[in-house]
Image (tube, rainbow, N blue to C red; front, side, top):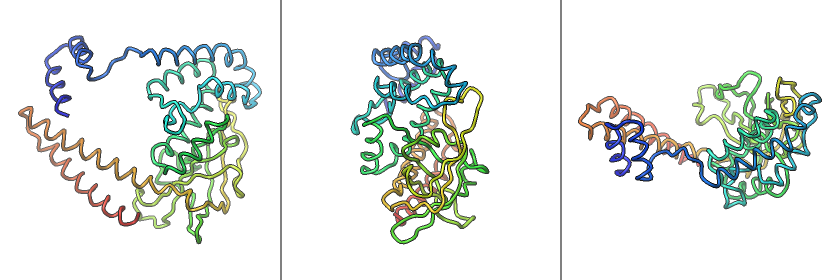
Amino acid sequence: GASHVRFIQQCRPLSAEAAAATAKANNVGYCFELSEEQKEYQNLARKFAREEILPKAAHYDRTGEFPWDIVKKAFEVGLMNLSIPAKYGGSSLSLVSHCLVTEEIAYACSGIKTILEGTGLGQAPVILAGNEEQKKKYLGRLLEEPLLAAYCVTEPGAGSDVAGIKTRAEKKGDKWVLNGQKMWITNGGVANWYFVLARSNPDPKCPASKAFTAFIVERDTPGVTPGRKEWNMGQRASDTRGVTFEDVAVPEEHQAVQFMLADMAIGVEVSRLAWMRAAFECDQGRRNSYYASIAKALASDVANKCATDAVQI
């Protein structure tokens, strides 16, 4: 807003130290001092890592056994599900606070850190774009007992290239049927439920933004088969494996329609940032043709896409 622009104008001619002092005085910008809550979580995680994880880390890394005892204790002391909103019973911890906890856990065992972060990764899309029923059911379940989630996106031929996903989702009556194989899935053999991304439009010319649909799949759904455990250096305590989906029927209500709405919201917000940058450059007395062109092109495309997607919804 205007106050943020004024702050940037004030800080531009100042030194880094003076800018930091201005930010602190105006309560604007970043402050790298930990809050009391952050210090409490950091100390809790540090104590837990050194007393509960470190003495057993070598054993779990050597044997590859899944450390359910440590997962249960982490759940009991409040070091799991940190990003779930308070509205659903979670801690609503900030990302910085969450990272402080992760850093302490990783110090003791990177494999156990991966277990806890893996379930957070599976939760994230549901937190961001799941509907109210999905959030209450699947996030709430993780808060009732020490259960885990998994994020099923990576495939043998598609890792970072999400557009290359081959897992298919076909609409049959009031259900979706999933077929495909996921690979390198953290918590793949121990998760209670999976977040699964599948191609719902078989047309290879279909834009990636419209070609995929996300689903929540229960671990015990017929047709779900976890593969063999992968033995990764420094990660043997974690459970990483492939997961095969063969004619897995998913109720229509498990389809995450709001992911399309989330994409629309992201597009609108990025467009707003683009025109703000163009306006800011102009206010500084500089040519803004470059940024204005970006804002015009982006906002036009986003507006068209949002209108098209809204009709589909």
